[in-house]
Amino acid sequence: MSVSAIVAYLHYLSFMLCFGALVLEAFNLKQELSRNEAWKIVIADAVYGISATVVFITGILRVIYFAKGTDYYLSNPFFYAKVAVFIAVGSLSIYPTVSFIGWLLELRQGRVPKLELRKLNRLIWLIRIELVGFILIPLLATIMATQVGTN
Image 1 (cartoon, helix red, strand yellow):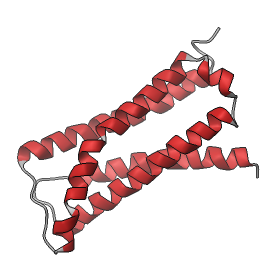
Image 2: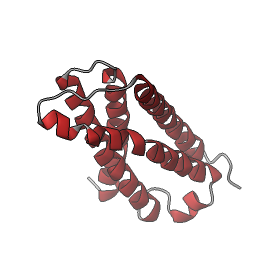
Image 3: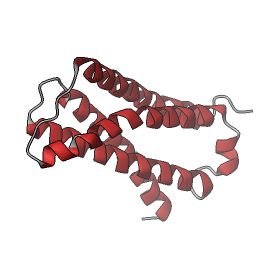
Image 4: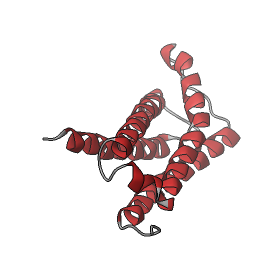
């Protein structure tokens, strides 16, 4: 197996892990959390962060060293749209991540974090928007791969 294939595999696998982690967060997030549900969310968010980092690194490797080459990507407007959506999703994830990290002290002490309804709704909407972003990224990648938008 070539290094290019391994990097591509890690890129796609990490992308799927990101999406799955966000879905897990979305399904477990509610106002009255159990300790187990809160831990699931914290762990899912850690998986999300690690996976997003791998997506980013392998994406850079694919653009520079593998796949279709730097010129192909940098001349395609859909590449920039895809990167912009990824950056936007990553930026939106900061607030939930900081919130979930804030739960760690309580969870380690055996307590369940309390969520105000307003904060819960904000977290749910941010996660939903992130999921929509992650749905758009493969669409943009497909358009880019079919050379739409290039000369």
